[in-house]
Image (cartoon, rainbow, N blue to C red; front, top):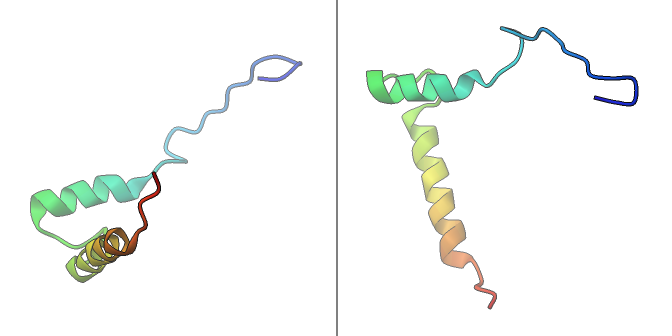
Length: 58
């Protein structure tokens, strides 16, 4: 939308986030197409380390 009016673009099948659908299928099917198990565990480890070392600001 701009001062000239509203515009529509046909993007069906051209954009999106296929990772999330693949991740869900990995969980259901016990596969590793979106992310390996090793990668997932490393991401979880880094989250826990970041939380451990975070400073609480009140």
